[in-house]
Amino acid sequence: MNNRYRFDYVFSYWIFCWFIFYFYKLTSFSPLFALIISMIENIFLYYIRISKHDFIYRMEFIIVNFFLKILPLYYIIAIQCNTKIKINDILATIILFLIYLLWIIINKQIYIRNNKLIIDTQSATPIYNILKDLRIIQ
Image 1 (cartoon, rainbow, N blue to C red):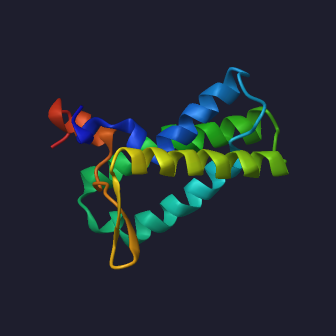
Image 2 (image 1 turned 30 degrees about the vertical axis):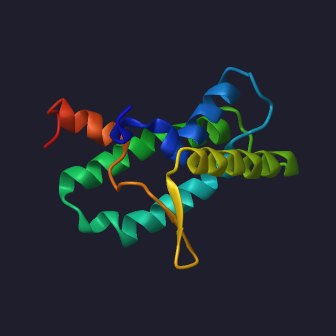
Image 3 (image 1 turned 120 degrees about the vertical axis):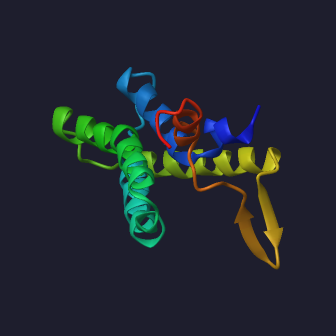
């Protein structure tokens, strides 16, 4: 499979899958903590890296994050009225992240170079690449 379409290489999609499991009550662990941390990370990412890109790329970033993070946050906080983050939710986030890192290592998408950990990812997300290939965006 072409790495441009590998959703499993982007941790945000793992968190979104967790939310889907939570939404359908397949797990009792809330992804609220993971969603909040990833939103904070994405806000920093936007101002540090994404804001320098063209308008279309910025809009793609915002739209993808709206569906992957803002809607799930809205559901958990506003609809479920669940604002408590339990220690088990934090531990579940850490375990999921460790499994994700192991998956990245197994798939040779992570390297150690000059004693620095480097994750080999492109700035474009799989959704962006699909839309670009379908010529929905330029």
